[in-house]
Image (cartoon, rainbow, N blue to C red; front, side):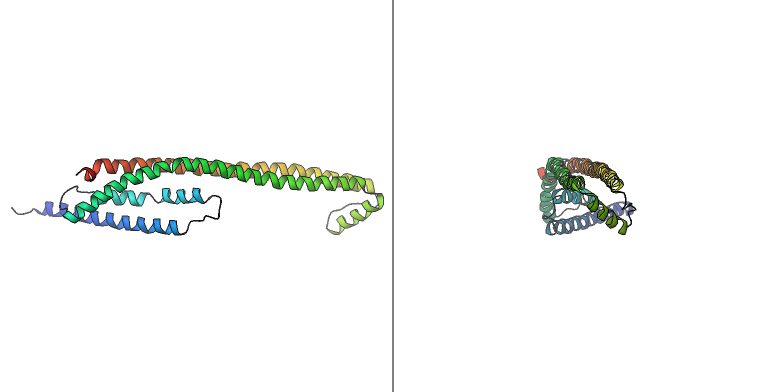
Length: 228
């Protein structure tokens, strides 16, 4: 029985999709090797960034598996059938891998956020200690020392009357108070912005990993190759 032109076109489409799928899987393998060989283990956020890279590139292997499984059993050779069984089970393994990525995302986000908060708090405490020492030194300064300090401040562009020691002390105290308030505000703003970005990425990558896990599981269950 002769094959119609429509059937021949459908057959060609099936083969074309499968080869494109294999190409996508090769690209995914290359990406995976590159990510694993360039792990930034020296950075505290390397786990998050690595998971993020896998999640953001997961569309390629999903499309690859879907296209490779296209057409089910039609025109499959025995050697290809064995490979498809392996790929089918691999899709199940990937479903589990992406599902297991979710807890580390939240755990690492929490740890990184705490470390960043501790670093900022430590820097603020150091600056506040320096300001307190300056205040103590200012309180112990005599008029001659205050006059010399006023001259130094004037030389760097801070206008202070060197002939009025009390005015010098008042202005410096006001400047210290301003700097102290700015430190607290800047620290809160920096930590709030970093915390927001961290958790936004954590939610984004966790949802992406969950969707990827569901799709890989569906590919394994619907393909039927693992049970053939």
